[in-house]
Length: 267
Image (cartoon, rainbow, N blue to C red; front, side):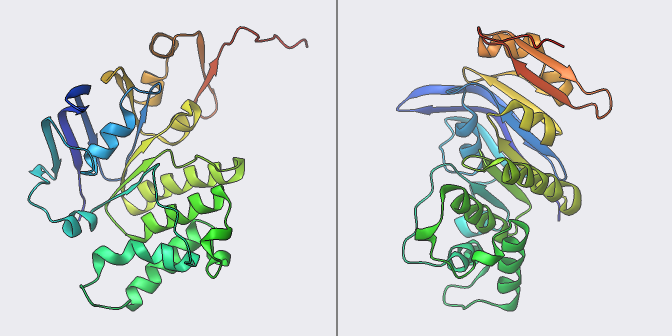
């Protein structure tokens, strides 16, 4: 079953002060939607509201046009999962045990792991490149390794909608690329609907079908990477000169911020 997750005219705040004003985001099967914008623009707050982790002051969050409020936490978790920036640091557990947390929404209250659970855990570890760490204590992992463990936990949950908040944080170049490839695979091969918060604009250009540019809690622009990642939009939002080049072979956008000390290379 395909699933559409949508936030409609969302007003979100902290301690009665609104920080997001009338933002709408629609996540569709087989498509990657990247939320971008400066720090404090409301990206992660919007993502958390879609995951039912931030209260909605006004507007609606819906799954297939139905309000999510009547769904129990377990029912919602079978359809939507979130990889957040703030995660507990487990202690005294092995990697496989942590990844297996993702299967809890699919189990009965006192039920043990099934063959399907074990297969989902094995698959999630394989695609995130941590299968050889299965028996390692998580206390011994680097930040990048632990990031991949939490990503595997998210994938083991096997949901139709995946929300990722800065999934490339703490990863070296290789695993940044592999994580972006995995995001595209989820959309292209499995029909997953993905919402991804990214600070790296070139990552957004690489992975997204749709880009939502937020500024001061409102949507500045929404559309394809070519439509949104323009000098006019980005320079206005980030407050510095920005060049946007389109690769003539791939059609991908390349974003270059122009700092005060930029240099022209001699040929």
